[in-house]
Length: 302
Image 1 (cartoon, rainbow, N blue to C red):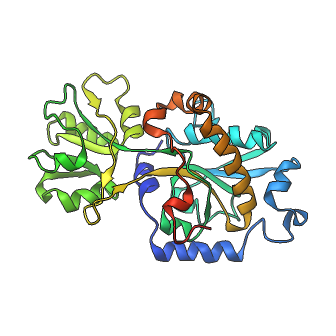
Image 2: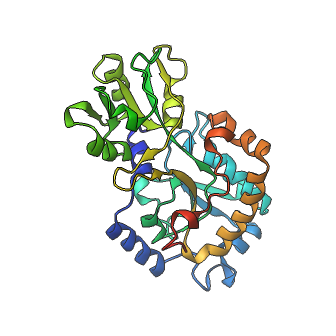
Image 3: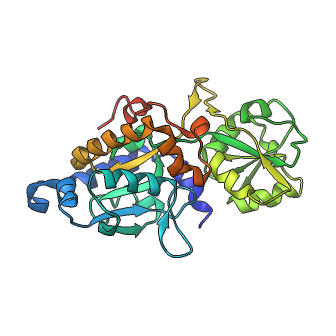
């Protein structure tokens, strides 16, 4: 797994990039009218045809396992939902794809994205998001025993502690606004940040809870705090990270059918947690509780 992929999943796509992606999707799609006999991707897949699904090799969301199978929280949830729609695993052609090509390749290289991609207004300009199947708060990784007593990002900013962040992430963006520059330790990946933490050159690492918990497994020198939401310094509002499957705007019927099955799954919290629990997701911290893609993209949901 490439640690650099962690930061890309969480960054927003700029307006120009999203607009270019939207034009590309409008211009060329496997599921344009007339393709697959005019029935669209959903009917084609339910008739037994292959569906091409892209992922970006990022644990715990979607990644290649040691046996070369594709697995992860998002993968297991979406396979469950697709099965409910009559689409079987042996119909899926998995397409390992660079993060920056997940949206731009939609409709040409692949038909659907399963990568735990955050729903953002910018991305909603280009694609049709399903409703979130998880939410993911941030957390802090600290030295064992949490000697600084840090509990969340914004209260840490009021101390003299040094925070470690990955280059290009939401955490770095917020840190630049609420921490003094000399109290921000920026590294390219999580491995480097852990080395900085253990060397005493930062007092806590800020990243998504799942990433940090996965990294902390079996390491007695560190621990991970409870999850929290980043706070937008300008608005004072919480920044909600919520991931979902992605379709072309031409496949909204497929998206809507998937949403119907997702609603049933989320109502059955025991079954949902059975699917995501092996990846350290919990009902208490990660269940989206009625959150929709339209809630997150009120002005440009499609």
